[in-house]
Image 1 (spheres, rainbow over the protein chains, first blue to last red):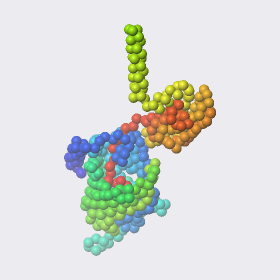
Image 2: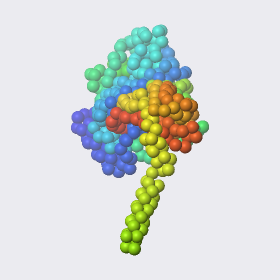
Image 3: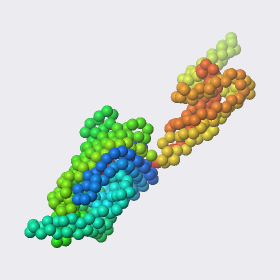
Image 4: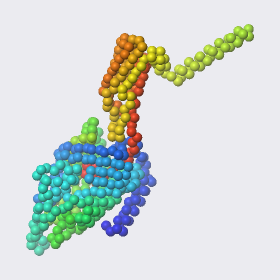
Length: 290
Length: 150
């Protein structure tokens, strides 16, 4: 994303946020609710259950979901949301505009010990502490028919930052993030967009659906899945669909179940170190909110 | 005649004033409250709570504490301690001049403790355990449908 382009997008986001603020029929936060949180408060939750995230990278095992801690803190403007941090610039009730910093996602497939596998995907197992992605090399067959070794290399933790626009219209919530890598590893760009909506209430618990896309520039895709002279990837668009069911169990417990399916775009799926087209994440368990 | 008329007029005025006072009292005070207040004054029964205030911090949702109620009277009394809107809580004494009662309670709003006669008709004394919330400000939680656990 060049500076000019980025500035235009930021202006567009501010305009969108202002417009949705003006059209908002939503009221201010006056008490604790599903949408509102007390300023200055920390919240902690722990999900215990059974689940798995499939790993599309060759020689990498699937990622278990057993214990998933979650935490957040909301100041007047500043917030921490698991591994994300941000500053809310506009909070109009129906829409918010924030500047956020969030970790690059794809590293979870190469390092079981990546923090995103702890705070989003479950605790790492002892055997999973080795950064196996950096040690593996893969045979790659070139069009000429000559096999080449895909070089093993490390993938560092990266952080992306940029504006985030979220909105709520009736029961539909939306999110749009325009992110740029700021840790100097791949200088890539990423767009995350998603809509969440309730589908029905089943047995006193809501069933909801989230649909969205992740667009990654060639810089990000190549950092994780490419190798100079062997595989040069382009940008990629990964759509996903998630169905989730949450049923309050009484007190601070709730039953949580979800299944998410992400389709990897060609630039990732065609990489010599990728052997799957889809990443599926499933989880069934209980969540305790402290 | 005139004296008599004057006297009758005065009597009528006095009756009329008493009537208005009674009517006003009936209008503005429920009968039981009025009776209770009077009895409490007459009997001088003293009720004390400890703690008297529960302060909720920002992250607290409810008060959970042991409440100690103590009463004393100049003469032996038969009475019951009750808590408004908590019908399960009732402790009675017969011919005592003082009494104490402790109970573990969880509550989110003010609790009113009352000493009543054994028939629970008249309020003999009343004290309120107040809940004070730290002034909280709220903001919107981040909406994040992209997140896997959202």
